[in-house]
Length: 266
Image (cartoon, helix red, strand yellow):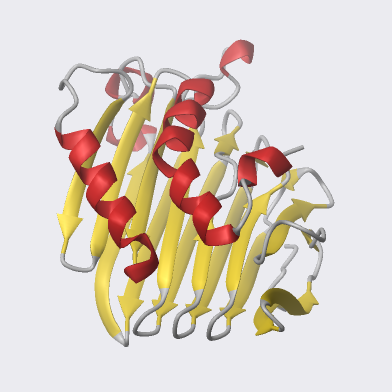
């Protein structure tokens, strides 16, 4: 088993910008922090093996200090290879008036793979958060549509010590044939938005989704809460999911980061 339990990332606000003050990555996890990108810090997760293999058990602790902003993403889709039994855990704390946008590329599980993911976000009062938790059907072009053994993902959020969200998805053929249950959807996502920085975006997105036709593609629903918004999306393919998610979030993320995150993808 390969473990990344020592991986840590810290971001602080200094002289009008957010800077990475600590980046300790333990294999197979690698943290890449390119310069530039408005006033926020930008960090991309990478892997020595190009994804999860064997019994990888990877964890990352993130601390976004008061007033700082972080865009946390990945270089490419998170691949979970065949016969893999892997886990990933992200534990993030977001300080007063700080902002975290956690938006990695979707998880793609190969045939026979098993992957468990947990993401925990502890927000101080006045902190703001966007989480995009996305996954795909697998290597569809290789005939591996929803052919993995298990995919489990969980997002929990607390604000000022009080839990406000515990969102979990479990996909397993043990509960019925996945390809049939998923219909024509090959890519899905859960989006969580919270905090004062995104108050206007929460109103706009909730309104936009509530006024869409019920049969409009991709399928999307929004759950509005006193603390924020949860959006669930099912798309025909990863490209459609990416386009729709970008339409929803490109404006508020660009404003929060001081630069367009899509312009920095490679």
